[in-house]
Image (cartoon, rainbow, N blue to C red):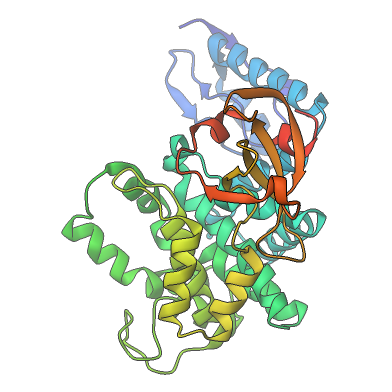
Length: 375
Protein backbone atom coordinates (compact mmCIF):
# COMPACT_ATOMS: atom_id res chain seq x y z
CA UNK A 1 0.00 0.00 0.00
CA UNK A 2 1.43 3.37 -1.05
CA UNK A 3 0.37 6.21 1.24
CA UNK A 4 -0.01 9.87 0.39
CA UNK A 5 -0.04 12.54 3.14
CA UNK A 6 -3.47 14.10 3.48
CA UNK A 7 -3.56 17.86 3.01
CA UNK A 8 -6.36 20.19 4.01
CA UNK A 9 -7.59 21.15 0.54
CA UNK A 10 -8.37 17.50 -0.34
CA UNK A 11 -11.19 17.36 2.24
CA UNK A 12 -14.54 19.02 1.58
CA UNK A 13 -16.29 19.83 4.85
CA UNK A 14 -19.80 18.41 5.16
CA UNK A 15 -19.34 15.93 2.28
CA UNK A 16 -18.61 12.17 2.52
CA UNK A 17 -14.93 11.26 2.22
CA UNK A 18 -14.27 9.60 -1.18
CA UNK A 19 -11.52 7.43 0.36
CA UNK A 20 -10.46 6.17 3.76
CA UNK A 21 -8.13 8.15 6.05
CA UNK A 22 -5.24 6.16 7.56
CA UNK A 23 -2.36 6.60 9.98
CA UNK A 24 1.30 6.34 8.97
CA UNK A 25 1.17 2.53 9.31
CA UNK A 26 -1.87 2.25 7.01
CA UNK A 27 -4.39 1.55 9.78
CA UNK A 28 -7.83 2.90 8.98
CA UNK A 29 -8.84 5.95 11.04
CA UNK A 30 -11.91 7.14 9.10
CA UNK A 31 -13.83 4.99 6.63
CA UNK A 32 -14.82 6.09 3.15
CA UNK A 33 -18.12 7.96 3.40
CA UNK A 34 -17.37 9.50 6.79
CA UNK A 35 -18.32 13.18 6.97
CA UNK A 36 -15.92 15.72 8.46
CA UNK A 37 -18.30 18.44 9.57
CA UNK A 38 -16.12 21.26 10.97
CA UNK A 39 -12.74 22.89 10.44
CA UNK A 40 -11.70 22.03 14.00
CA UNK A 41 -12.34 18.33 13.35
CA UNK A 42 -10.26 18.48 10.19
CA UNK A 43 -7.38 20.24 11.95
CA UNK A 44 -7.43 17.60 14.69
CA UNK A 45 -7.26 14.80 12.12
CA UNK A 46 -4.37 16.41 10.24
CA UNK A 47 -2.41 17.06 13.44
CA UNK A 48 -2.52 13.35 14.29
CA UNK A 49 -0.85 12.56 10.97
CA UNK A 50 -3.29 11.48 8.28
CA UNK A 51 -2.67 9.62 5.02
CA UNK A 52 -4.67 8.18 2.13
CA UNK A 53 -4.07 5.14 -0.07
CA UNK A 54 -2.88 6.27 -3.52
CA UNK A 55 -4.97 3.55 -5.23
CA UNK A 56 -8.11 4.74 -3.40
CA UNK A 57 -7.40 8.30 -4.52
CA UNK A 58 -7.06 7.15 -8.13
CA UNK A 59 -10.30 5.16 -7.90
CA UNK A 60 -12.14 8.17 -6.46
CA UNK A 61 -10.81 10.40 -9.25
CA UNK A 62 -12.03 7.88 -11.82
CA UNK A 63 -15.50 7.79 -10.23
CA UNK A 64 -15.64 11.59 -10.34
CA UNK A 65 -14.58 11.65 -13.99
CA UNK A 66 -17.14 8.99 -14.92
CA UNK A 67 -19.88 10.94 -13.16
CA UNK A 68 -18.90 14.13 -14.97
CA UNK A 69 -19.04 12.32 -18.32
CA UNK A 70 -22.49 10.94 -17.49
CA UNK A 71 -23.72 14.38 -16.56
CA UNK A 72 -22.54 15.70 -19.92
CA UNK A 73 -24.64 13.15 -21.82
CA UNK A 74 -28.15 14.10 -22.91
CA UNK A 75 -30.49 13.35 -20.02
CA UNK A 76 -33.75 11.62 -20.83
CA UNK A 77 -36.64 10.37 -18.72
CA UNK A 78 -35.20 6.86 -18.40
CA UNK A 79 -32.01 8.32 -16.92
CA UNK A 80 -34.03 10.41 -14.47
CA UNK A 81 -36.14 7.42 -13.38
CA UNK A 82 -32.94 5.42 -12.77
CA UNK A 83 -31.62 8.19 -10.52
CA UNK A 84 -34.81 8.08 -8.46
CA UNK A 85 -34.16 4.42 -7.59
CA UNK A 86 -30.94 5.41 -5.88
CA UNK A 87 -32.54 8.43 -4.26
CA UNK A 88 -35.02 5.99 -2.70
CA UNK A 89 -32.18 3.74 -1.58
CA UNK A 90 -30.55 6.67 0.22
CA UNK A 91 -33.88 7.71 1.74
CA UNK A 92 -34.71 4.28 3.15
CA UNK A 93 -31.25 4.00 4.72
CA UNK A 94 -31.42 7.41 6.39
CA UNK A 95 -34.13 6.93 9.01
CA UNK A 96 -31.77 8.01 11.80
CA UNK A 97 -30.99 11.33 10.11
CA UNK A 98 -33.17 14.40 10.81
CA UNK A 99 -35.76 15.45 8.22
CA UNK A 100 -36.79 11.99 6.99
CA UNK A 101 -40.43 13.02 6.38
CA UNK A 102 -39.35 16.06 4.37
CA UNK A 103 -36.98 13.98 2.22
CA UNK A 104 -39.71 11.42 1.58
CA UNK A 105 -42.09 14.19 0.54
CA UNK A 106 -39.46 15.63 -1.81
CA UNK A 107 -38.87 12.23 -3.44
CA UNK A 108 -42.60 11.64 -3.89
CA UNK A 109 -42.94 15.02 -5.59
CA UNK A 110 -40.02 14.18 -7.91
CA UNK A 111 -41.71 10.93 -8.93
CA UNK A 112 -45.01 12.74 -9.41
CA UNK A 113 -43.33 15.28 -11.70
CA UNK A 114 -41.64 12.54 -13.77
CA UNK A 115 -44.93 10.68 -14.14
CA UNK A 116 -46.68 13.87 -15.19
CA UNK A 117 -44.05 14.42 -17.88
CA UNK A 118 -44.90 11.08 -19.50
CA UNK A 119 -47.21 8.61 -17.78
CA UNK A 120 -46.79 6.07 -20.59
CA UNK A 121 -43.05 5.86 -19.96
CA UNK A 122 -43.78 5.46 -16.24
CA UNK A 123 -46.06 2.49 -16.97
CA UNK A 124 -43.52 1.08 -19.47
CA UNK A 125 -40.98 0.88 -16.63
CA UNK A 126 -43.45 -1.10 -14.52
CA UNK A 127 -44.25 -3.58 -17.28
CA UNK A 128 -40.86 -4.01 -18.91
CA UNK A 129 -38.65 -5.07 -16.00
CA UNK A 130 -35.19 -6.51 -16.53
CA UNK A 131 -34.84 -9.97 -14.87
CA UNK A 132 -31.08 -9.35 -14.58
CA UNK A 133 -31.72 -6.67 -11.96
CA UNK A 134 -33.56 -8.76 -9.39
CA UNK A 135 -31.18 -7.74 -6.61
CA UNK A 136 -32.74 -4.24 -6.57
CA UNK A 137 -36.29 -5.61 -6.65
CA UNK A 138 -37.16 -3.91 -3.36
CA UNK A 139 -36.33 -0.46 -4.74
CA UNK A 140 -37.91 -0.96 -8.16
CA UNK A 141 -41.08 -2.48 -6.70
CA UNK A 142 -41.58 0.44 -4.31
CA UNK A 143 -41.13 3.02 -7.09
CA UNK A 144 -43.44 1.13 -9.46
CA UNK A 145 -46.13 0.81 -6.79
CA UNK A 146 -45.84 4.51 -5.97
CA UNK A 147 -46.37 5.64 -9.55
CA UNK A 148 -49.28 3.25 -10.16
CA UNK A 149 -50.83 4.43 -6.88
CA UNK A 150 -50.45 8.00 -8.14
CA UNK A 151 -52.26 7.30 -11.41
CA UNK A 152 -55.02 5.23 -9.81
CA UNK A 153 -55.62 7.63 -6.89
CA UNK A 154 -56.07 10.46 -9.37
CA UNK A 155 -58.49 8.38 -11.41
CA UNK A 156 -60.45 7.79 -8.20
CA UNK A 157 -60.63 11.56 -7.67
CA UNK A 158 -58.36 11.87 -4.63
CA UNK A 159 -56.88 15.30 -3.94
CA UNK A 160 -53.16 15.99 -4.30
CA UNK A 161 -52.42 15.77 -0.56
CA UNK A 162 -54.00 12.29 -0.44
CA UNK A 163 -52.08 11.28 -3.55
CA UNK A 164 -48.73 12.30 -2.03
CA UNK A 165 -49.49 10.45 1.21
CA UNK A 166 -50.37 7.36 -0.83
CA UNK A 167 -47.10 7.59 -2.74
CA UNK A 168 -45.03 7.98 0.44
CA UNK A 169 -46.73 4.92 1.92
CA UNK A 170 -45.90 2.91 -1.22
CA UNK A 171 -42.27 4.03 -1.15
CA UNK A 172 -41.82 3.05 2.51
CA UNK A 173 -44.18 0.08 2.98
CA UNK A 174 -41.30 -2.43 2.96
CA UNK A 175 -38.64 -0.33 4.71
CA UNK A 176 -38.21 -3.08 7.32
CA UNK A 177 -37.45 -5.69 4.63
CA UNK A 178 -35.47 -3.69 2.05
CA UNK A 179 -32.59 -6.18 1.81
CA UNK A 180 -34.88 -9.20 2.16
CA UNK A 181 -36.95 -8.16 -0.86
CA UNK A 182 -33.91 -8.43 -3.12
CA UNK A 183 -32.77 -11.74 -1.60
CA UNK A 184 -36.20 -13.31 -2.07
CA UNK A 185 -36.30 -12.20 -5.70
CA UNK A 186 -32.98 -13.87 -6.55
CA UNK A 187 -32.79 -16.89 -4.24
CA UNK A 188 -34.94 -19.16 -6.41
CA UNK A 189 -36.48 -21.09 -3.50
CA UNK A 190 -39.44 -20.40 -1.19
CA UNK A 191 -38.81 -18.21 1.89
CA UNK A 192 -37.26 -19.90 4.90
CA UNK A 193 -39.10 -19.91 8.24
CA UNK A 194 -37.11 -16.94 9.49
CA UNK A 195 -37.79 -15.04 6.26
CA UNK A 196 -41.50 -15.84 6.54
CA UNK A 197 -41.49 -14.46 10.07
CA UNK A 198 -39.87 -11.23 8.87
CA UNK A 199 -42.45 -10.92 6.09
CA UNK A 200 -45.32 -11.50 8.49
CA UNK A 201 -44.05 -8.79 10.84
CA UNK A 202 -42.91 -6.23 8.28
CA UNK A 203 -46.07 -4.04 8.05
CA UNK A 204 -45.98 -3.32 11.79
CA UNK A 205 -42.19 -3.13 11.88
CA UNK A 206 -42.10 -0.71 8.93
CA UNK A 207 -44.62 1.56 10.67
CA UNK A 208 -42.51 1.44 13.85
CA UNK A 209 -39.41 2.48 11.91
CA UNK A 210 -41.28 5.36 10.31
CA UNK A 211 -42.56 6.60 13.67
CA UNK A 212 -39.02 6.42 15.04
CA UNK A 213 -37.85 8.43 12.00
CA UNK A 214 -40.25 11.22 12.93
CA UNK A 215 -43.23 10.47 10.67
CA UNK A 216 -46.38 11.86 12.33
CA UNK A 217 -48.87 11.55 9.44
CA UNK A 218 -51.24 8.92 10.87
CA UNK A 219 -52.77 8.08 7.48
CA UNK A 220 -49.30 7.38 6.06
CA UNK A 221 -48.53 5.17 9.07
CA UNK A 222 -51.91 3.37 8.96
CA UNK A 223 -51.56 2.72 5.24
CA UNK A 224 -48.16 1.07 5.78
CA UNK A 225 -49.35 -0.82 8.85
CA UNK A 226 -52.49 -2.14 7.14
CA UNK A 227 -51.30 -2.72 3.55
CA UNK A 228 -51.58 -6.50 3.91
CA UNK A 229 -54.89 -6.48 5.83
CA UNK A 230 -58.14 -7.49 4.11
CA UNK A 231 -61.68 -6.31 4.96
CA UNK A 232 -62.77 -9.93 5.45
CA UNK A 233 -60.20 -10.38 8.25
CA UNK A 234 -57.99 -12.81 6.33
CA UNK A 235 -55.03 -10.44 6.02
CA UNK A 236 -52.05 -9.90 8.30
CA UNK A 237 -50.55 -9.14 10.74
CA UNK A 238 -53.59 -8.11 12.85
CA UNK A 239 -56.44 -9.71 10.81
CA UNK A 240 -58.31 -6.41 10.82
CA UNK A 241 -61.78 -6.14 9.33
CA UNK A 242 -61.79 -2.35 9.14
CA UNK A 243 -59.05 -1.19 6.80
CA UNK A 244 -58.43 2.38 5.61
CA UNK A 245 -59.06 2.88 1.89
CA UNK A 246 -55.45 3.90 1.07
CA UNK A 247 -54.24 0.59 2.55
CA UNK A 248 -56.72 -1.29 0.34
CA UNK A 249 -55.42 0.54 -2.71
CA UNK A 250 -51.81 -0.13 -1.75
CA UNK A 251 -52.50 -3.84 -1.17
CA UNK A 252 -54.10 -4.25 -4.60
CA UNK A 253 -51.28 -2.39 -6.36
CA UNK A 254 -48.61 -4.24 -4.35
CA UNK A 255 -50.05 -7.65 -5.25
CA UNK A 256 -50.71 -6.72 -8.89
CA UNK A 257 -47.15 -5.46 -9.41
CA UNK A 258 -45.66 -8.49 -7.61
CA UNK A 259 -47.54 -10.85 -9.93
CA UNK A 260 -46.24 -9.23 -13.12
CA UNK A 261 -42.66 -8.80 -11.85
CA UNK A 262 -39.92 -11.36 -12.63
CA UNK A 263 -38.51 -13.55 -9.87
CA UNK A 264 -35.84 -16.25 -9.98
CA UNK A 265 -38.27 -18.97 -8.88
CA UNK A 266 -41.20 -18.18 -11.19
CA UNK A 267 -42.25 -16.66 -14.47
CA UNK A 268 -44.29 -13.44 -14.06
CA UNK A 269 -47.96 -13.46 -14.94
CA UNK A 270 -49.10 -11.56 -17.99
CA UNK A 271 -50.69 -8.22 -17.22
CA UNK A 272 -53.94 -9.55 -18.64
CA UNK A 273 -53.97 -12.56 -16.26
CA UNK A 274 -52.97 -10.44 -13.26
CA UNK A 275 -55.66 -7.88 -14.09
CA UNK A 276 -58.31 -10.61 -14.39
CA UNK A 277 -57.32 -12.09 -11.01
CA UNK A 278 -57.37 -8.65 -9.42
CA UNK A 279 -60.81 -7.89 -10.80
CA UNK A 280 -62.14 -11.24 -9.54
CA UNK A 281 -60.62 -10.81 -6.06
CA UNK A 282 -62.06 -7.30 -5.69
CA UNK A 283 -65.36 -8.43 -7.23
CA UNK A 284 -65.25 -5.65 -9.76
CA UNK A 285 -64.80 -2.98 -7.08
CA UNK A 286 -63.77 0.59 -7.89
CA UNK A 287 -60.09 0.16 -6.95
CA UNK A 288 -59.56 -2.90 -9.16
CA UNK A 289 -61.50 -1.26 -11.98
CA UNK A 290 -59.35 1.88 -11.73
CA UNK A 291 -56.10 -0.13 -11.82
CA UNK A 292 -57.23 -2.07 -14.89
CA UNK A 293 -58.43 1.07 -16.67
CA UNK A 294 -55.26 3.01 -15.87
CA UNK A 295 -52.79 0.31 -16.91
CA UNK A 296 -54.89 -0.84 -19.86
CA UNK A 297 -55.43 -4.18 -21.59
CA UNK A 298 -52.25 -3.66 -23.60
CA UNK A 299 -50.08 -1.39 -21.40
CA UNK A 300 -46.93 0.36 -22.56
CA UNK A 301 -44.11 -2.19 -22.53
CA UNK A 302 -46.30 -5.10 -23.68
CA UNK A 303 -44.94 -7.11 -26.62
CA UNK A 304 -47.57 -7.94 -29.22
CA UNK A 305 -47.88 -9.46 -32.67
CA UNK A 306 -49.75 -7.46 -35.29
CA UNK A 307 -51.93 -8.82 -38.08
CA UNK A 308 -49.23 -7.57 -40.44
CA UNK A 309 -46.87 -10.18 -38.93
CA UNK A 310 -44.70 -7.58 -37.20
CA UNK A 311 -43.75 -7.83 -33.55
CA UNK A 312 -44.21 -4.52 -31.75
CA UNK A 313 -43.94 -2.94 -28.32
CA UNK A 314 -46.83 -0.91 -26.98
CA UNK A 315 -45.60 2.64 -26.37
CA UNK A 316 -48.71 4.79 -25.96
CA UNK A 317 -52.19 4.29 -24.55
CA UNK A 318 -55.06 5.81 -26.50
CA UNK A 319 -58.73 6.51 -25.79
CA UNK A 320 -59.42 2.85 -26.57
CA UNK A 321 -57.86 0.22 -24.29
CA UNK A 322 -57.66 -2.32 -27.12
CA UNK A 323 -55.99 -0.12 -29.76
CA UNK A 324 -52.78 1.43 -28.39
CA UNK A 325 -49.94 2.93 -30.41
CA UNK A 326 -47.05 0.50 -30.88
CA UNK A 327 -43.47 0.57 -32.17
CA UNK A 328 -42.57 -2.28 -34.53
CA UNK A 329 -39.28 -4.00 -33.71
CA UNK A 330 -39.42 -6.69 -36.43
CA UNK A 331 -40.50 -6.79 -40.05
CA UNK A 332 -43.41 -8.86 -41.36
CA UNK A 333 -41.21 -11.93 -41.41
CA UNK A 334 -40.18 -11.56 -37.78
CA UNK A 335 -36.67 -10.27 -38.47
CA UNK A 336 -35.38 -7.45 -36.22
CA UNK A 337 -35.34 -3.99 -37.79
CA UNK A 338 -32.80 -1.21 -37.32
CA UNK A 339 -35.35 1.59 -37.12
CA UNK A 340 -38.62 1.21 -35.25
CA UNK A 341 -41.83 2.36 -36.92
CA UNK A 342 -44.86 3.56 -34.96
CA UNK A 343 -48.07 1.75 -35.87
CA UNK A 344 -51.68 2.66 -35.07
CA UNK A 345 -53.39 -0.57 -34.01
CA UNK A 346 -56.85 0.90 -34.69
CA UNK A 347 -56.06 0.36 -38.39
CA UNK A 348 -57.17 -3.14 -39.48
CA UNK A 349 -53.83 -4.08 -41.08
CA UNK A 350 -51.98 -3.29 -37.84
CA UNK A 351 -54.54 -4.63 -35.36
CA UNK A 352 -53.17 -6.63 -32.43
CA UNK A 353 -53.42 -10.36 -33.15
CA UNK A 354 -51.84 -11.69 -29.93
CA UNK A 355 -49.47 -10.98 -27.09
CA UNK A 356 -45.97 -12.48 -27.35
CA UNK A 357 -44.51 -14.45 -24.46
CA UNK A 358 -40.81 -14.22 -25.45
CA UNK A 359 -39.63 -10.86 -24.12
CA UNK A 360 -35.91 -11.25 -24.90
CA UNK A 361 -36.03 -9.08 -27.99
CA UNK A 362 -37.69 -6.25 -26.06
CA UNK A 363 -35.06 -6.34 -23.32
CA UNK A 364 -32.32 -5.97 -25.93
CA UNK A 365 -34.07 -2.97 -27.46
CA UNK A 366 -33.06 0.38 -25.89
CA UNK A 367 -36.31 1.98 -24.68
CA UNK A 368 -35.01 5.35 -25.87
CA UNK A 369 -35.25 4.06 -29.43
CA UNK A 370 -38.87 3.06 -28.94
CA UNK A 371 -39.75 6.52 -27.67
CA UNK A 372 -37.46 8.56 -29.91
CA UNK A 373 -35.37 9.85 -27.00
CA UNK A 374 -31.58 10.40 -26.97
CA UNK A 375 -29.70 7.24 -25.98
